[in-house]
Amino acid sequence: MTHDLRLTARGPVDLARMAAFLKSWPPATHDGLDDDGHLRLALVADDLEHAFGVALRQDGPDTLLATFSTDAPAHVAQVRRVLSLDLDGQQLAELGRSEPILGGLVARAPGLRPVLLGSPYEGAAWAVLSARTPAATAAGHRRRLQDEYGEAVGVQGRSLHAFPVPERLLAVESLPGVPAEKVRRLHGVAEAALDGRLRAEHLAALPGEEVVRTLKTVRGIGDFYAQLILVRALQGTDVFPTGEPRVRAALEQLAGHPLTETDVVRLTQGWSPFRGWGAFLLRTT
Image 1: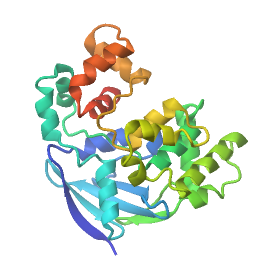
Image 2: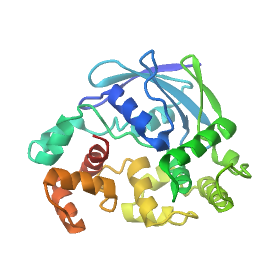
Image 3: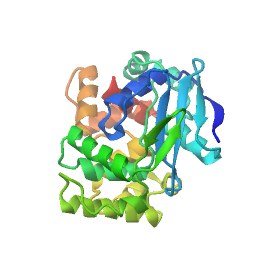
Image 4: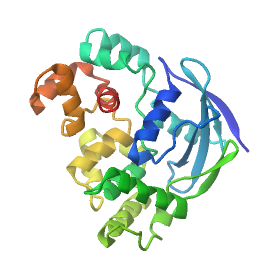
């Protein structure tokens, strides 16, 4: 039984912009907005035991109409997190008036909110797949895992495959083109998910430094990828990834001169509590 709900945010929401980002973002392995105007998502639920689907369409400048494949409040909260609907876009716009670089980023992409991976579990699996591998190749491996091991869910008249739940990922013995060590690391991700280390609720309750330490206990996850999982799967709204070259390069272009890590911290300090949103806009617009 499907469940319809209106999802409202403070400040604008542009579903078409967010869908375009998903289409261009290799970790999402997504085709973007469908020809009927819906964005369809198949997600591993936060309980990491099953998958669910949701179809979204624009229903006003700050509202999306969502049709869920099941009636579960936890799924609503997860979709709100993934699409950053709980972040205050009105407060961001006000802050942008006193922070010119941030304000310019917001102005050139109105309604574009940070779009996150479905869970820290999926973020950790992507970290393993993409390490020392071209993004397009890693996306192909991820899509193969979805198609062969992921649960199929019905989403507004269409069927989509979610990423495999941890128990199914443990069943993957080999993957064409993927070294055996990476498969073992994927199993490590699945084991960490099953023992609770990658549950979104658990990680969201920890300080940022403790989140990074916890993520680094997963086989194959070091400092760099732990930071990226924090920012790209946990709504790290006030975390700016100073070590991400693409984000720093975009900031240097807007600043008009090279920046040290100290410079980046100082320049973005005034963006708080939206440093993560600012970083997202730097790497996507």
